[in-house]
Image (cartoon, rainbow, N blue to C red; front, side, top):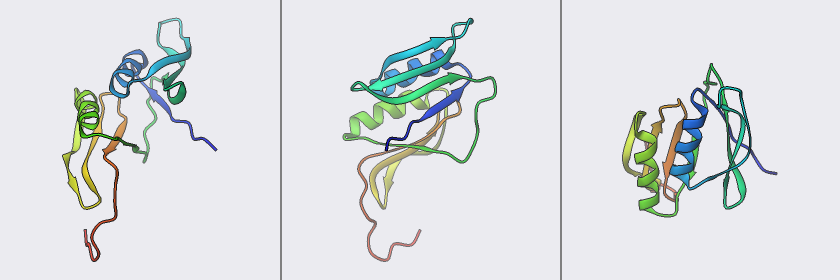
Length: 128
């Protein structure tokens, strides 16, 4: 089974370009609306679908946060920098009891991201 992630945003072209830059994605199959925004787009990572970005006048809002685990601190910090430009940081870069580095940012398109390095179990007896 594979799970697809579809983002419905205002400013789909700019959003897709931002995510391509942040995550090292390339534009795959796509269909444009008459105004040049995306009716459908597939953003690929290493040839596999990673995100779909679609234009929507009313961006979908809900209790969803997209989590991405990075293999290096530099990669995480680079994505954090790009996504936080014009966005809102609700948890700045920092250590958590289960991650050496993590952050939460809602980008300028209204998408919330949990960015982290590989996680581990917190110490025994941890109380939040």
